[in-house]
Length: 408
Ligand code: BGC
Image 1 (spheres, rainbow, N blue to C red):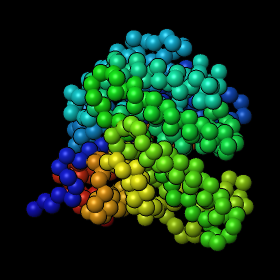
Image 2: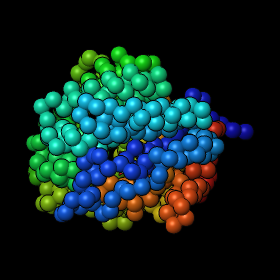
Image 3: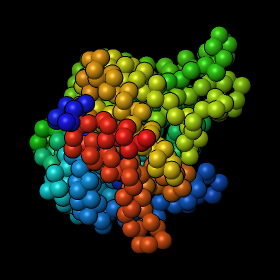
């Protein structure tokens, strides 16, 4: 007898982004960053996982495994290669991509901006340009007019506050600025850009359901009661969690759902230059050095419910070369998800980051987030891991023991 742990129409899928998978993107700020001297980038994204050409067989594989939905991205610098100049060929390509998803029975959740900016925009200030929101809006308008009918769900901007922090606060992403005040300004700008995207999408074709996708991190003082740690944790919490959630709660049209992306917690040590303390002694960690901390997932699900919108978990996953660790990670986080739903949270879907091993930004291709591996020595052959099989069964049956059983 199968007992359904999750609702029948729950959105089960995995996630990817354009730059991390497509390959052949040379017209954005990340390409420049990877090829500039003195940046922290490990290697170029190059051919990615050649998803640009292989999207159809990739979608066929995800569907055959049992997945029902897929979160993917459009690359702005392909669609608008020069300012105000739109590529019909790129738009037609993405139309074929979205039609392929539909044909394979995968519901599309589309990201319009996932960390990469066209070069022409970074050349004149990127998200600090005075007209950045309107320029982004013009791109969204065009995409909505061309492709809106094929985008049932849209999460316009991936992790606005992480983008702001990585690019302008920690200097880990282009343009490599390290100034928390600038990062806070950019975070506000990106929330405005989210609202502008909602307006554009409402006016376009079709009727996409729209959501802001936020990575939420529990920021905890390393030493509770220590004034420095408490203050630093509070400042990060305010910028990364409170401000975007307050913006979503402030009224006006902010969309139809909210996306939660969750990986780990952060213990804040005001004496360390990066403000980050290592995970506690003995804690399980991932290949990225992040602590495995499912408790924080429950906390952040609760926190994001303040937006008073249905929740979709748009990313959750782990970098590991040990797929049994991935199975345990997913099973533990899904158990927390079920518990929170049983307590009444309105969660509509769950997407594993990532569908495939892919380009992990500054860390290059080394971290393995995929439920499906890529054999780069063998023509980028797709290698289905046990986690992908178990997750596909869960997607088909709604039965959590598909994961927990496989994880044992
Ligand atoms: C991003 C992904 C990234 C993942 C793992 C998220 O912040 O949206 O692009 O690969 O985390 O680091």
